[in-house]
Image 1: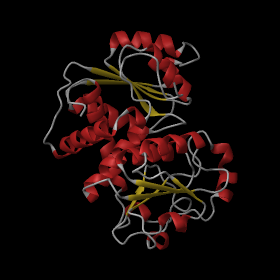
Image 2: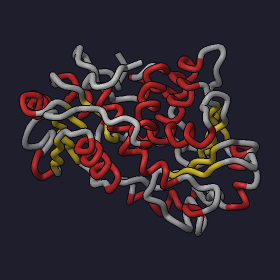
Image 3: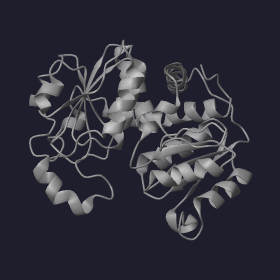
Amino acid sequence: MTLTEATTTCRHFLSIADLSAEEIRAVLDAASAIRSGELRPDVAGRSLVLLLEKPSLRTRVSFELGMRKMGGHSLSMLPQEVGLGGREPPEDVARVLSRYADVIAARVNSHDTLVELANAADVPVINALSEIEHPCQILADLQAIREHFGRLEGLTIAFIGDGNNVAASLALGCALVGAEFRIASPAGYELPGDIVAQATRLAGQAGHAPQLLLKPENAVDGADVVYTDVWASMGQETEREQRTRDFRGYQVSPNLMELADPKAVFMHDLPAHEGEEISEGMLTHPQSIVFNQAENRMHAQAALIAMLLGAIPSA
């Protein structure tokens, strides 16, 4: 059992790799149909509880409105209202919420908390962000990429920056859907070795193992997608000065985009910091699909919830 796995028989979504390639495509099909208005899964009378150890604009709004648009109910709870691991153990929180709700989503400081929730829950638990993975973000990203290019297989996705939770889920997701993943990071900030090994296994003989590079220019060369994230994530504020020094030269700018394929797109999971990981104006650059990504959080998560609740086929 890996760190991302739970021991209960209930279906959870703690890692992007908890879905097969076929299931990812089914979720993306449903997400695009939800976005276009062709599909509205029926989860009337079903409920979602969202546990937030970290604040977020996109996570809270996309989960709450996505659930409501399908006819369900959503309730968000802040740290002081739950006290995960402090006032009450995650296992007890999961057992109680399983009596109240049909789905639990959690944005947590520690992935261990997610695993503890999932091990005790009798309803699906969704990883809304942990320090190890951000799989809901990647479902939205893959949806945005596929909607733009009409496919995922054979595309080259270049990630510039920290080998963080977003990069980890993106590497695994690319391996599952047949896309090539490259990441350029400063020394000491590489994609974790266990994620590289897992992505390599998932890609198989016919797929692409992740490419770990040092120079952004090498990663972006001919790429179809150029993706970046903040240099210092939430909880890393004390490292900001050091990271600003270490990531100098890893900014995505129009000049860097010129090295990618002429039809390439730019992506960022937000929030973004102009003057750091991106130059001014990149979010609204003609090649940017950043706000399509952001919108797709709602549609992709709605499709995921519907699948976990059996409201749409899993494949």
